Amino acid sequence: MFHTYVVTRSGNSVDIDRASFLMDKQMFLQVLKDLKNGDTAPSSREPSSVPQDVWDTYCAMHRAKYGTDFEPDVDPDWDHSHRISRGLFAAIVLLPLRKSSKVAWRNG
Image 1: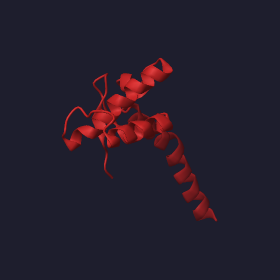
Image 2: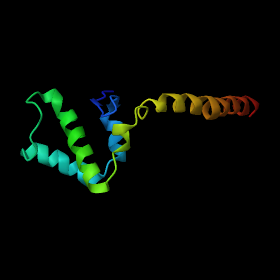
Image 3: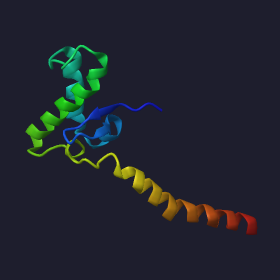
């Protein structure tokens, strides 16, 4: 699995694919279309800068449209708290389910 990380205004590295689920889909597609058509000037000619250009442009458009910052861009813990959540989810929900299903299977 490949991940594409960008640097947010808070200085955090965020997986743009994870954050894209929270984006306004029409606006996100417009950013991609504008970059492809050359309507938005990229910050660099380096291909590796394209995800950062998409991120920066989307966040500016989000601010202009909604009057607030895009949360993953300004929350320094946004893409890091999921590690704790997954661990807690596994410990609280999955492990007891696995144990109970093994017991039920053995008794069945």
